Image (tube, rainbow, N blue to C red; front, top):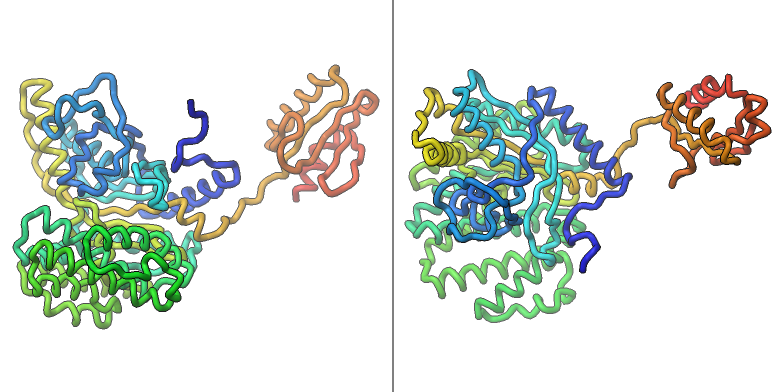
Length: 506
C-alpha cells in the first residue's frame, strides 16, 4: 500500500501556492488587456484526440493514460481492445481546439477571431531521471482566425509584455520557423518517419550549440547535468568510439564542455545517420549547417541563404525576417534566431519561439495549421457514427483552421524569480479564550471582525498573528487583551477594537 504523494505531481504549501497564484494573476491581467477571455478545459480527454502522427510521437508517448467506464471514442485511431481510452491533458491547445470545432459545427463560424486564455495543470508521463515534473502549471493563450502575420506579431508582443510585467531578469526571445526548417530537411527526400526523427535531432543539435553560446554558467551547468547521462547512453548504444569524458564529466571544465558537448553530439549524429542509416555526407552537412547558423539577426539570414534551395523555404524565411523587423520596431527585445526554437510538437508549421531567462526557457509557443482541420474531420465522422448523418462544413470554416499560441511554465517562472512580491494585507488575527464558557463569545467576536473585512482565525495558527485573548475577568468588563507577535500585550475596550486594528494596519 502507498500513501505518499506520487512522484512528479504538484503538492503545494501555502507560500508556494500564493507564488503560483501571483504569477497566474499577473499573466492573466496582461492577457486581458489584449482581449483574451479566460476558458477552462477538461482534465481528461479521449486518447484519440492525441493521435501520434498529428502531435508528434514524443509527446504522444508522454501521455498519462486513464480509463473511462463509458465512452464514445473518435473513430479508428487505436485498437478497440485498448484498456486506456482517455488521457490527462498534456496541453490546453488541443482541448480548446476541440471545443472551438464543436462550436463551429453546432453554431456556425464565429464572425471574428477567437482569443482564449487559460491556466491550470497539464500532465506528462515523463521518466524520473528526466528532471521534469509529471504535473506542471501552464498559463497561456490561443488565437484562432486572425491573419497570420498580425496574429504572430500579436503573440510575440504579448510574450514581451508578459515578461516585462513579471519582472523577468535578462530575458531574450529565441525565434524559429517550423515550416522553414521542415522545408530544408524535406529537400533530402527521406521517408516521413526518418524526416521527423532527423528534424528532432536538428533541434537538439541547435539547442546544444545555442546553449553553449548564450547560457549563463548556472543554466549551462544544469543542462549538462540533464544531458550528459542521455548522451552517454546514446554513444554506448551507437557503438561509436566512446568519449571517455562522458563517464568522467569532472575531467573537463564548464568552458571546455561548452565546446565539447556539441562536438560529441555532431559525431554521434554522423555515426548513427551516416554510417548506420546511410544518410549521405551532403545531407548531414545540411542538418549540421542549419544547427550551426549564427543566431544574431544581423547574420542569421545571410548564413541561411545557401540553404534556401527547396520549395517553401524562401517564403518562410521572408515571413520570419518580416516578423523580426516588426518586433524589433515595436518592442526591441534581445533576439536569437535558431532551429532550437522549432519545438518538437508535430502540429507546428510556422512561427515557433521560446522565451528564456536566467534559468532557461520559461515560455514557448508557435503557429499551427493542421490541428483544427484534423479534429474537424474526426468530429464530423463521430457525429455520423452517432446519428447516421455527416454534418456539413459551415462556410468560412477555413479561416478558423489556423491558430497561434503560447504557454508559460508557472513553476519555472517562480523558480527564476526566486520569490514573488506579496500584496499588502491586513495582519492576520487569532481569537483565543481562557475558559470554555467564553467559546461562543470568541466565535461571535471573530465572526463580527470578518464581516468588517479583517482576516481572523479561531485559535492560534501556524504563523505569527495578532492575538485577541478573552478572559473571564476582562470580558466581564468589556475588555480584550491584544498582543502583537513582537510586542507586549495590552488591554483595550472591545468597543474600540475595530478602530485600533485599523489604525495599526495603516
